[in-house]
Length: 126
Image (cartoon, rainbow, N blue to C red; front, side, top):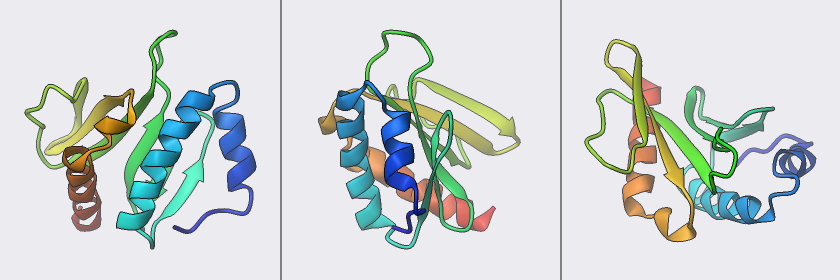
């Protein structure tokens, strides 16, 4: 994956004081790196964004204090019918943004990775 020069420092700042969440993110990152080696990643103040020409996935920290893990977000052309999607919003017609909480590495499974692959494909055609 294409990383900016300051990626490591930005990542440590993003996860400061949250080593368990950093480890969970790194497990997700390794899976995304294997699936999308050509993608770019950008650490921002409130989220980590994954691009391949266009944004296809984001990782953020849950907004409510005390909520564990990460929030993995991605866009699809339809609303997921899965209880794993804690929230789905349709900011534009037929563009659904899904937010999936991930609290343990076992949740970084083929179902989630399949959705991220669909999100990548959707980002390329919209």
